[in-house]
Image 1 (cartoon, rainbow, N blue to C red):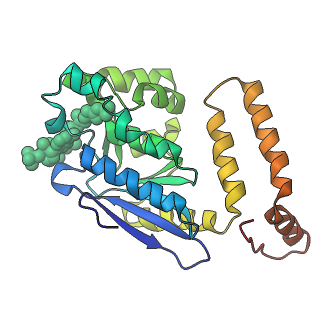
Image 2 (cartoon, rainbow, N blue to C red):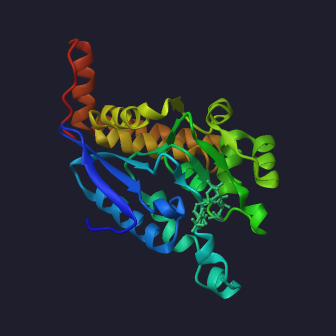
Length: 262
Ligand code: CAA
């Protein structure tokens, strides 16, 4: 895949591997413009469609995961450019349609659209240098890629309001305490830990992994009763797979499961 604003690699040596996407506009701290987001969408789609890929990791640089939507690109936008062209939605929605797990490995700034992009991933592993924030209010706008909705779900109303209204950043330790990130690790260990998490997912039955992701995401839509029923039906469905027979047989026979992805 030949891209100008991101780098893509396949990592891992197992039967299924990890698609690694590195945001790569270092001079602009990985500010997210249309070209980058189109490339990110294309890379995500390609990895999602590739049977050899079990999991995707998105990362940035040591200084910035991403410092937000590209302010230079947006500065002169009119209502016609934003509402008329459905700005943000047009090329930001792809990540939400990816069915395989997507892990964000975040070091440095994850601000505005960068924080929103990280929150669109399934979970965030942060370096101890990570800083999260929704500073759009300082630009006379508000978050436009889900920040006002996903941040309160992740950290609760008080902290979300504090961040969105005052634009203050949260460091990695606070982000972990608040539930925004799943783990904080030293910067030097970030990629190793994120890729190891991906590897552990790659070894599993991909169909159960996809259903697990779909079911957890249901927790944020609709009622608890609907979500419980949705989960139960997916749970029932997994008993139609060979991988369920293999996983349970392996447990009972005290051996490692060898999933066949069917
Ligand atoms: N868009 C475009 N360019 C950006 C950018 C962004 N979001 N963030 C940083 N840059 C550029 C800077 O303009 C600068 O470029 P030059 O070298 O050409 O001057 C370069 O990246 C380095 O940035 P700084 O010199 O500012 O670096 P710093 O270390 O002093 O500060 C920072 C780092 C605190 C992240 C600061 O750059 C900053 O505040 N950036 C903007 C953050 C922001 O407001 N994000 C929200 C954007 S709006 C949005 O995202 C809407 C949405 O919901 C989708």
